[in-house]
Length: 328
Image (cartoon, helix red, strand yellow):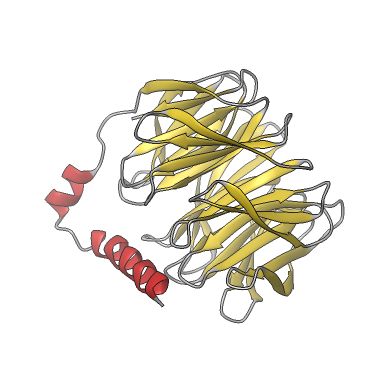
């Protein structure tokens, strides 16, 4: 019960941020584009990355050597390397239970790490080719997509028992997944049919399907504004579709650079960050105006993006040179 009280407190603080007076809210928003303050060598082929804001630690999967690098946000150094097995794809953190969830496509499983000891705690079989993973820390529920060709499956895992408690049928070849812990709503990017599935986290049912267009490789949620940002790539157009979580409709699209990758949102500053593969940069998006306000050079072939909203720090994994760029 203590963990759930902490989760409720964290969520309450985030909700309270929206009640700040306009002047204070403006002062709390970063007015400048961040700069790279550190470059951290990690493993080979770093890809997906996640952050625990409460412990100020980052976790990046290294796809070519099947490991997870643990990064201290205080010292900007790798403090542990966790060897695992299989082809690693996705990673997510439950900041309340301090557990780290890593998907392994070749093993058809989710690997659960103890964030305190950096050791493998359990292995959860889900079958198929698990890819995207997201956690609702309030309900201690984990959501995992099956990226097998032609798959339409989202697995729902109980974080208490480390078992699959349900499966949900979504769109064609689901990839990225994110959850709004305030509303409990889950969003799944269906990579090859250009849609986003909207799921009621209480009933595990699809309540809406939002047409975005093109391929939808990534998405992220701002729980405070109930807005979803979904990357769309196709027919030479590269955009971020802005979806209202209230109406489940696309309200606008933001042009970005070619070959955009994962996207992350800082709900406090209301800024989104997206890796751009064509020019090795991180695009900075002001979600108040839905415009790209800056572009920051990072490492070679940037991929994963994660944000610590408490320290206002961004992390970008650079697959081509085996590093993580730290921006502040």
